[in-house]
Image (cartoon, rainbow, N blue to C red):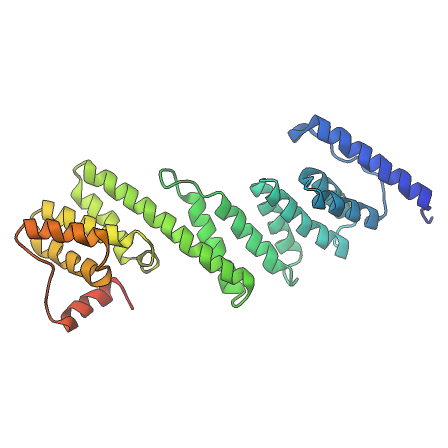
Length: 280
């Protein structure tokens, strides 16, 4: 039976009243919209209106109702995308990831799947913690961002993903440096060397801001072990790649105090060494 304009207005009023009550109660205890068959356009447009007013939780309620009453429809597809966005804006990253996963599972061939993959990666990225804590989320973000760059090369999503990948690598390299410094202070030089070398030898980390310090710390630790040749070699790599860096100035001072200087060997040999450490 067609729904009259008056009936539609009543439905809209009921829906608004329901969400007003929900907003007053707030949080996880907010009652969900009671199931009542409504025109899909009304549900979707009301959700979209809440979205425009930054009433994220209310918008999710309406979009979930669209999905519940009209599963596998075009409206449902759009509603899941809107839930991804609303959850993200509200800081509900796990819920946004779950909605993105659901969209990918239900509509893997949709052109909008790129957005779902991207938002899933972004939600992981937004939850990265400081280098003093476990970096499991950073690893998840890195894997998800690489997936976006691989699946959708040349897209704006891939372009942003590549930028974020560099930021995540900088974070992970920073974690290696933090652990390396801890081992160095704890007089565990071999463990410290392992962490610093992880930064220097990992191609993804070599482009981060931590590489000059990692090379300097290697100079520092090797000198402490009496391994002047290794210290000098790392000092040469530091000076060749970062001649203006304050870390090179510090390394140069340490080496000259020990009566040695960074290598001044023929360029070919030095470049051969560099290719093994810092390609390109």
